[in-house]
Image (cartoon, rainbow, N blue to C red; front, side, top):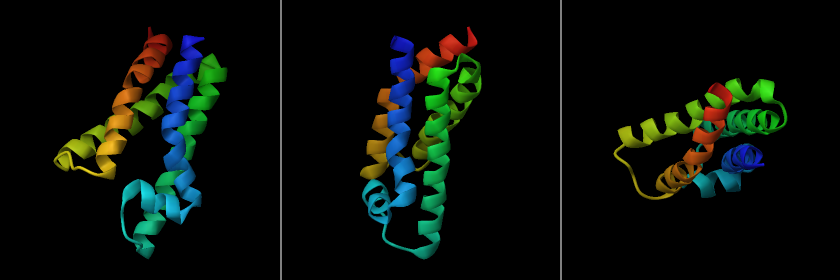
Length: 118
């Protein structure tokens, strides 16, 4: 049960940015950026990619055979953001909120990764 809960945490962490693919208002609220056509397309595409991460995690919660790949996908998402955030100088605002959310979800990622790989 704890393992399924950890997968659900990962789904929940990736759901708001996934939903941003379908809402300009949510993209603006999540990322705090002004409207720009090019940036809007990039953030919409980012949302679709987060939808793929959330779906992979949801699928892994139900199918043990999917768990190794799902841990790789979730780790790339979360660790990749940590690296980009650190490289940007740990800025305040919405990006810090995203970083803290990913940090809170890191134990869930560690748990599901341990289960999938060891």
